[in-house]
Image (cartoon, rainbow, N blue to C red):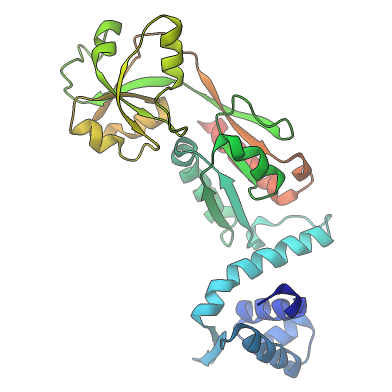
Length: 301
């Protein structure tokens, strides 16, 4: 199926039938006669090769195919209405928009739970899509409008993006409870360097910020496991004497799994979690609402 074969009015009719579960109510909502909506449904069925809506229990119930395409139709129509009437106030409670956020393990774990609670409360019909990213590609993702926001640590953010600071974070050491090298909940630098280390790196290398700082002092740690994400760390650390360094807020969440955190035995500067977005979204009320909620949640941390 190609776009030139679809009349926009057919998608409007589809959305009205989906919302009302009735041909007659959809017609009333659209200011049309019932035969016109029935005719639109007949054309939709032919286009999609599916019944889309079938009468059951006195209502027009959507088929699996209709349920599959409904979110995309809702979001597309909502964005089109906003584009045609930019002065139309954004209503979170009435939106079915899909918000796409590029996010790391850290920002997803720390910011997503409270944001999802806000979404369910303020915008219950909105959808959330979280995507991973390579930092070298983030500028293109923002430019092309593939994402609404990007969350993470950006030492060299794209010049064509708006950069907004969210919160500060710092590393702590993490190991299993009862680790033999932990003395009174701490490790000396010499002892820590002799441990076997796990490193989380999204760049597919074995050099983190800590290693760059150690190199400046002529030191190095023994990295024996490199991972692209944090999910496997609790099981890995609990079943071995490996140690790792994690953001403090993540380490706190791992405490219930039987892991303990300890101060790193070398001074480490704190770093900033930031949000990037396209400057063309300054007047996009939906994007502004999204940014405001993320900012408020970060501030509460």
